[in-house]
Length: 476
Ligand code: GLU
Image (cartoon, rainbow, N blue to C red):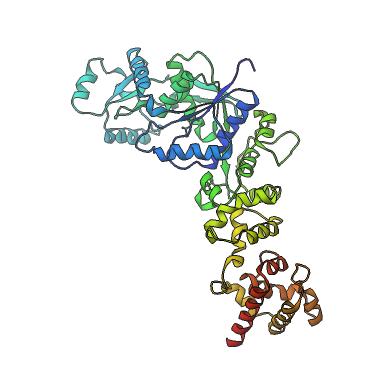
């Protein structure tokens, strides 16, 4: 690479950080780190009505949580209005842009008329040739004034995309577009193009949904006299399994939601890194540093990436299993405290975590599964569908009685509480009896391994639960 690359992540703070945006940030970060370049965080908040400080902060805390650090910024576009104003004034003075004064109703009528003539909607340049003295009069008459960039009428707009190859459209399909709104704020096209020039950005990696805007941004760059070419790479979108745009109805979509559901940042970032990119050797478990060492745009896929929640669960489980008991407890403690209160029995927690680790998917599901250990006998409840399973189990009275008898006298170790010899004696297959025993002890007919669970629960409470189940059966 001839010069040190400079990349930016340029989110608009109009909501929480979506995993699709994170992946854009991640690919830019990986590219910058791979080439020892710079990674700039720029907040595109010129649309003041839709931007909020809390979202600007949320974006930063989500990125920090994921380990995506930045070298410069955050640079807020809302602090740079003077710069944009100056540039717009120059474009106006050079005749590259002009003011236009249509009301929204007039613009709608113009679009209707174009549609009737089978032309694409868009501003046809009516105000292009208003004599220079007229705008002041129109503005004074109280009409809204926007500034539009003059686009060519003929020829094609073409740029080379690192992933998509050459992208080209007819200039005639790109109407003179607004670069300053009637309220005086610059639009995305103007601010984005100017900042990429001003910040010396060399590569823009961004979502494919923005590809149509690139022609307009390049037109602004040209009008502003940009000296260098910006290298674009538009990465395919992330879709859900039904090939729709990934949205709330498919489950978590923002970083905060994944964090709150008990995903580890290192697992989430690993998963997103391999969504649309793969290292040459096909590895699936990689740290950020390992991904940065290998990252290149040539291995970014050209088709949409499908978000696979099960695969993320598996990967998160791999990271959870790789934790030492001490680290696992450290990660799980806040979740456990939120669920069971600050006075929870830490010894029970650490033992239960080790038991749950083998089949873990998320921290939250691990903790939810162990609620029966932290509930008093008064609080403990059996889920209705699990009670039905228990009540419908053949010879359930004998199973409960046999288990109880064994637990009253056995040695209190994980091996000692093993109930399979009891079931053997009764000639009942464990598969048939186990759901009922799980239900009686854990409140669900499947969950944390039963013998470890009974062992952790202690003799008194395990027996009390079997007695409670027996009594409930007898009474009902
Ligand atoms: N601010 C734009 C967005 O959040 C991104 C612009 C860009 O990456 O060029 O969609």
